[in-house]
Amino acid sequence: MDRRQFLSSSAVLLASSTLSASAQAPACADLPPRHEPLDKQQQQYRIGYTTNTRGGWEGDPFKGMSEGREVGFRYMEIFGASFCRPDTLYYPDNAEGLMRRIFEIGVNFVSITGGSATGNTRFEDIDSREAVIENHFAMARFSRRFGCQVQKTNTGRRRPGGTTDEDLKVMAATINALGKRVSEELDMQLGVHPHLNSQLQTQHELDYIMANTDPKYVGLVLDTGHFTMAGMDPLAMGKKYGTRVLEYHLKDTKAEDRGGTRNVPGPEVDLMKTPYFFPMGEGGVDFPGLKAYLDSIQWRGFLNVELDTSPWRPPQESARITAKYIQSVLKIPL
Image: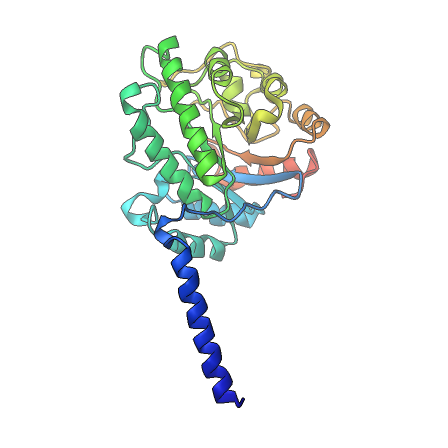
């Protein structure tokens, strides 16, 4: 058999086998979507930085990424709503364009958090449940394109009357349903983020949500600054929830607030005029104690710096202060 005959016969065999296989297998449209497995984190800690710091970065996530990378940070956490604006319109249809842009800067994402800019965030409203789940699941699906493993979300703005036990019951069911879908369809973990002036702020509210959601589907993003200023000791809460904490947000508070403030600030406090969050090293949070505990349980994950405001210096300078603390005091490389 010469080369031409060999190629001709091979083509016939390939065509016949393809037809046979297609006759037996269902069409691609009938197959459930499959995701490549996410790589497990190799090093114990990865350090991230959030790029929305007021005082210079709040209007331009790419400026925050670029200046954070200049300091040495290689992973960035960003609000998904940042990419829904007309001037940065990457979500939901241009993940590739966003990927090219951040790789040019030299960073990747810790996570792309929350929902879209116009999506529903009323976790406490039972009639909004499906809209809330769809809004936040869609952002999780987008962030998975970048290899993100934890989908962090807040729970919507706190109402003037606060959060009732009935609200918590509805919230827990919605959060659990969202976590279940994120886990089963995306192979990711949902981390709920207690935050001052949100529907999930106090220890009672947090404990209720943790007790009434499945640990398989719902974890915790523990913010050392927000926990402290909500009256909780972040180290004690870290020990309470152990490996159910999926990610830590790192920022400091005044030394007198250490262990949980007695003066919980309300929404009327302007953080650009009266800040209560600071770069690491201010003395309000026992970061060495927290790291020692995490070492003891062999916790692995992202330690993500999130400074809400930088009113006295450019955000990049605040980032340098924290970078130096992480490397020199905690002995963790960036």
